[in-house]
Amino acid sequence: MKASLYHFKTLRDTPSDTELISHKLMIKANMIKPIASGIYSWLPLGTLILKKVENIIREELNNGNCLEIIMPLVQPKDLWDQSGRSKEYGPELLGFKDRNQRDFYLGPTHEEIITDIAKKEITSPKDLPKTFYQIKDKFRDEIRPRFGVMRAREFLMKDAYSFDIDENSMHETYSNMKKVYQKIFDRIGLDYRIVSADSGSIGGDKSEEFHVLADSGEDTLAFSDKSDFAINIELLDEKDPKKISGMSSPDGNGKLNLKKGIEVGHIFELGTKYSKAMGLTVQKDNVLKDIFMGCYGIGVSRIIAAAIEQNFDDDGILFPESISPFKYYIVLINQKGNQNINSEAERLYSELKENNIEVFFDDRDLNPGVKFRDANLMGVPYQLVIGEKTSRDRSVELIKRKNQQKEIIKINEIVNKFKN
Ligand code: ATP
Ligand code: MG
Image 1: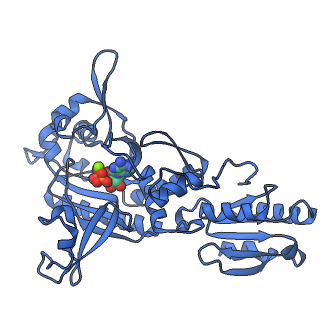
Image 2: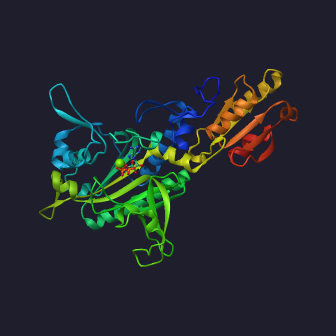
Image 3: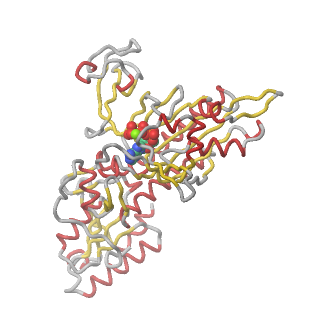
């Protein structure tokens, strides 16, 4: 992509009324635009990154034999009455009436819809086990939307739902999904931990959360210094972090240490909560059996904010390569003075593009300082500087964004080098 054809209006000043660095940087880099409290549009740069996260998630779920579907955002209240959650869920659930006075909710999650689908689609034990998923906007009327897309009212979630014939099979599906989640977060390149968690209004017997470690995290996690014991402190009797730190671990092994985390994923064994409430059964050996369910969420849009909380410096974002908007940012210097340099840069850009190397070409008629500022802000991992000095010996300067490590490379060697 060429800067002259792209749309990004980065801000010079730090936006006010932003508490978290990720919120500041996403606004500053022109990735998102607020329209109302907790409601955002995603501009081209933000959308590009969001799609990268989405694609990694989609690929790994497909590899794990999960089946992608699309469910409606607008959900009949009747289904929520069947599950008993229209009362239980609380004021985060935003409802309205259609012209015929029928009640609907904007979907904050989709257990009711998927259970209703399963009632119609799963007609024999041969249809089991099965896992469906979607990547879809959710609406939750959060009491305090804040931190940009981290806690929004409308946000993108991946939600998956599994169906099994019995409890053991559900355990197996759950543990396979946990592995798929580990692949996803490993591939994105985040420093994360898995902890036992409270199942809240989703329900079920067992749940675990995936947390990106960051000092700005809203959740406090406790880890034993001697065992694998790891828990969200909301599950402990004692809630005061000062008292928990140093306490003996409830599993009898070692002492508890605390870390802050941002919840990016949550997986649940639901058991038969929704099947019982809504009548999801299957006949096996002449007996009607309640189907065992699991559900599995990932905060797709939140991941981007969390990745930034973990990867930034004074100049801007340091995206993990897996989700950076581009891999290389060509900084063209002094294009007015020398036509040769211009065409050299054009050629390099076309060649990289032809070889499917993700490149952003800053061909704007601006001084180098502005281009470096934007390159640093956007979090592109490598900068390719091409100007008078390098062009004379047909080379470019490659700068690693993270540590400013510099290297001179011959132009005719670049494509081969980058392809490997
Ligand atoms: P939280 O405790 O942060 O409110 P939750 O327990 O309500 O999260 P789930 O219902 O498990 O969240 O939703 C699945 C995932 O969706 C969460 O792990 C989180 O990453 C993401 N998520 C939840 N609420 C929001 C929100 N308001 N804005 C952005 N992402 C969210
Ligand atoms: Mg919540």
